[in-house]
Length: 127
Image (cartoon, helix red, strand yellow):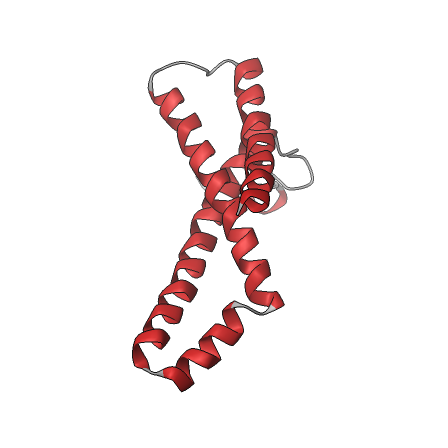
C-alpha cells in the first residue's frame, strides 16, 4: 500500500532542522576549493597560451592576470591550494583508521581551516 503521508513529511535532513557541523562544512569547502583550483589552472593555461600566440594577445591576457581581479583570483587560489592540501592530508590520516572520534575530527577540521589561513599568509608574505 502506498504511503499516504508522504507529501506531508519533510525530506531528511531538512534544512530547517539540520545544523551543519564543522566536518560537513570542511568537506563541502574541499569540493569547492578543488573546483576553484581547476578554474584558476585554466586561467594560468590561458596566460601561457597567450604568451605562445603573440604579443598582442599576451598583452590582453597579462592585463587580466595582473589586474586586481587576477590578483584576487591568484590569492584565493593560494588559499584554496593550502586548504585542499591540508584537507587531503586529513583524509589520508582518516584512511589509516585513526581520528574518527568526534573530538579529534573537530580538531582536525579547525586545524585545516587555521592552517590554511596561516600558510596562505606566510606564502603571500614570502612571495
